[in-house]
Length: 254
Image (cartoon, rainbow, N blue to C red; front, top):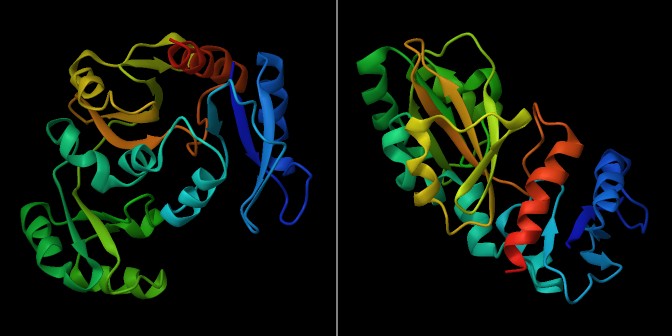
């Protein structure tokens, strides 16, 4: 089966209550639950040596994930984690299937933003792993300057600057993927147009594909994420563990 590492409370052997439901589901599946205190950093209850190990918990930056990987072998290596968690690791692989985008340090972002604004009058500015909420949609360079001040973005921090695409009025769908297979909540398939992405991303063990539809009805990829730190969105926990994480265990055991 699997070792599942979940967050502990800081400086404590106690499970973070926010992850209690995941711990219960992991144990129902037959996984061993281990706890990770990122503040120390320290791992409680070493993982079973014979089983592959996954982290499920709060988003970790590169140094924090490398700290965890130094404590125990992980199925998702730091290189794989970075390739899914940060847009710089996945954008080129799925560029034809996602809105046109560029990367630029915050201090040098104005020309790229201006190009997008000339084309559509607005664009989307976010970090490499998450957006700035409603502030991410900008319509002027003044908006960008305000965003950088409000969110205290350092001049050298990389930004992900994206074409604005009008979307249909329906929720995004989150697909969890294991190698070359994608699983949708309640069994819905990944749209056929987006299936080439699975081949392009298949070196990754566990990742997410967030899908939306344009106003014209075309399926597009909004974002790729690491499946260990992605929230469940429309998924039921039992479905996630008994469909996706069971598949991880089976694939890793081959």
